[in-house]
Image (cartoon, rainbow, N blue to C red):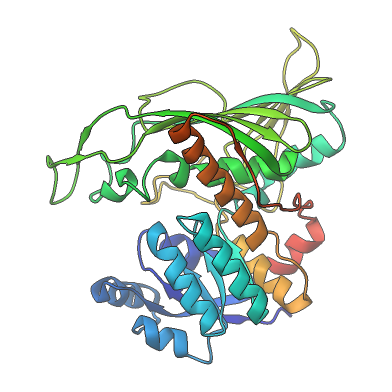
Length: 385
């Protein structure tokens, strides 16, 4: 029977719902206390999930808690993760690891010194969709991947989020910080680490209008670029064109397409866990579908639309598997899959995309990481209920 770790939650916003539900799927963690800078939010969370609401400092000092689940806003990720490590807690954070590469490096340094684990979202690359694509690529089904396209593009969150301003703020805003981690982590899982980035950027609108909530109709200033076009060169020679935008009403492009020497592949949405992988090996041939809905982390588990915008009946959502796999890795003394070096490499690419667009010149990726290994059925079965 798996040993259950007590987890303390800091940041009681919308995403917390998903992690509480993850306790139904995974067998080695239990969220026992929560805290938030907004005490009302923490108290509401505690009532909803029948746990205790405490202050941040009280939670960090609790010796019964071994892991901090850091679900704060991006600009607070660094300080909360640092406090967690300095209080001898392992920490698993939502993406990104930090807002700056300097802060990310500091967290890795502290964790190594104190022999603690850092885990970091996204963990969606551990789902059936990306893992099936990885399995097929490693079988050389389309040969060596030479080129590819990836895209995330939509109008932004101002129409359905009551407080959208942080997504358009100067240092923490923009689509690269918000959605880049899903696409970059998925690509690294499939192709290995990146070595160089070239980008251009633009701002679609100078002002946006809030669509719901008490501030409905209020206009706010957009303080960052909202569309980026980036070319990423990977260590293995692959070249991927990545589009990330808050300025597109709608589109019909695939999330990720990979073009190999012997065929082409469509990889499902990296913000989700399931979805089929499509492969064709000859011009004019039909696309063969490799379904993932039979896989443990690919099965559709959302029966009705929840309040989360990224959930529907057509998708699987097993967010929390990265936290569970980290806890398993702590117990077995191995490197966790959503590890600090992987997250730091992703943060390096994010910063390089921003710098390249500002300076109008390519940026080398200086942080190295290992290409993740396949998430085996044995590993998955050991942490699932």
